[in-house]
Amino acid sequence: MKKVILSVLAMGLTMGLMAQTKVYNGAEPMKFNANAPKTAGIVYPATFNDCASVEEPFLYTQDGQSIYLAITGTNAFGDLAYGQRYQGANYTITGVAAVLLNASIDGTEEDMAAVVYDANGGNIGNELARVGFSTADLPDMVAEEDFELKQFTFSSPVSSSDFLCVIEVPEISISEDGSQLLGNLAFVGSTEIDCASGEMSYSYSMVSDAGDYGWVTISEAWGGSVDLDVMVFPIAEGAVGLTDAELNSMSYVYPNPAKDEVMLASSFTISRVEVINVLGQVVFASDVNANSIKVNTSAFAAGNYVAKMYTESGVATKKLVVE
Image (cartoon, rainbow, N blue to C red):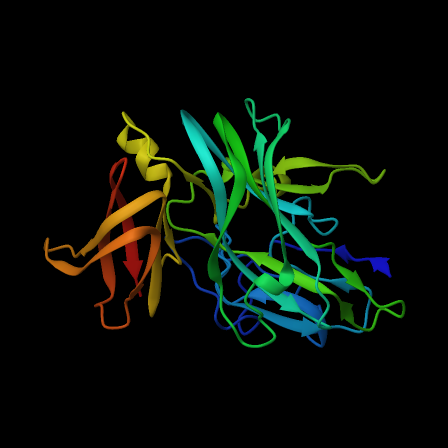
């Protein structure tokens, strides 16, 4: 098997190239190489702009030796891990959650892992905790399943105030003749609303022609042209004295904008959620007693909403957009 060389180009909007691409907040969409034949090995999401939302990926195949991915750290080789950095209070971390989807190309199973690393001012350091799982544990895009939030619990909690939550993904490979993908393609969801923390999103990527791998921010890898939050976050014990900013940074909305359904989640146990429209009316409310809940938004009027999550550490408030 060969290591697959990936290539992604940021291009202007090309009419008809990806009909489902959307422009949010006036941002210019990013595009794949327009000359790439959509016959094998091409992966791209239905929703993809400069904040790189990955919500509905589509899989193609190609008879050449290059495939094209929506997000890849240095835009040179397939990434081996994706992570999101968290800073603030000294959190007690019991596990990692992530929005995940896998494309099982040939039915084989491969190992994956959820890991927490010491971030130490952005210099990714020691591994603090790890739990393994399999691609077979994930929803399968080939079987037309969708992204799901998956939680992975460590054998023992760890504490840190500056850390990286990571999902390790299988290495991408193709057949010797370059005609087909092999193994698995694992996706981590990302979101574009409130994506200004893109410097907190990392990939473990090829960083030199010599074949060296290292951690880079995805924004840095794209020369500052991509800003996204990958949906990998800690599961933590309740904390006291958090600021609103800290509490909101540990709470999540995916996908955002939402269409028919949205996931509201927190690193802390949620007792109740409310969704409030611009008139101050509560259009949805439910008790939860978990770290996440899915809300059917198909009957919501298009527009802006506020999602309130009542957690064991306080009330988090997040913006929600419904299309």
